[in-house]
Image (tube, rainbow, N blue to C red; front, side, top):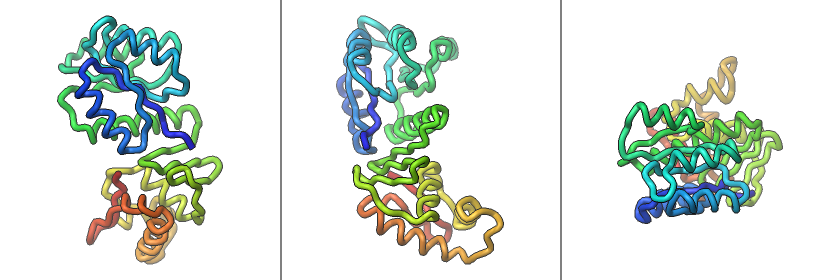
Length: 224
């Protein structure tokens, strides 16, 4: 399974490196461009770019001009990085089909979370029931999970549990909430059922099992 490919466009090399490092750490493939013209050239010459992170203030072509050019060719999701939060600028971006705005300075973890949220939303809209997080790829339709491109065997409930964790990554989930959503509201079993399934799921995920954090006295949180 291929990693989701992201184009990062910013004239500041330090900013590109910061964004790239966090995205790569989270399991994405990153392509860079240092100005607006290069961004358009790279986008036209590269297949399967799934998301563009685009700085507003750039030489040659600014972010809005780049977004306009990309929109002539593709509906790929675009996240704009801006040094200031101005309603008129945001409205201009949204009118060009920009999906998200993030104001500098920002937390790289928040950026990664926004990227993952936009990709989940886009994939759901396209009907591509695939979720990719931190080297774990779930093909919902085919009911297959890949860890670092190797398929693993999960039971039906382990699959449902992992799916629930990935969709709610970064969110603290109580055992009751997990029970209600994965085992459904008509299940009146013991919450220890969850602990047993989490233990098996962690084992099957190998090193990635560490992403499932225990919140003592409450439940679990999936965090890359």
